[in-house]
Length: 153
Image (cartoon, rainbow, N blue to C red; front, side, top):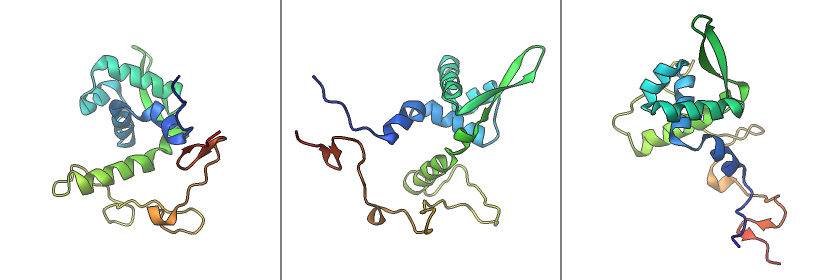
């Protein structure tokens, strides 16, 4: 019998948004693209896959379908508050790609209200310190687990 994997919020989140087209849909919605045809064009997703991803994101409460036409009835997709909370994830993924994959030819840059090109950082909400690897310590709270894996019986 296969052992259960480590309980993890990353795995739980990836089960909802950890697929290429799900993340690209969120990118498009965050850029202000809300209608199916434009999302399909901009992501390159096959229509059947895009339909399935949009349905899953709506069911999960990450996006909502909002009517924009009565005749014919048509909907657009908007981020819910939960969906908007994924914005920092998209920004840090984009920053990583800019640094490691597209360093000399960034396909999109975002300008912050201060007028500068955004360079996102993850910081502690309490002290404002950078949340880099040396500053973090894991406290495993899942019963039966340690940082190295399942607790030996």
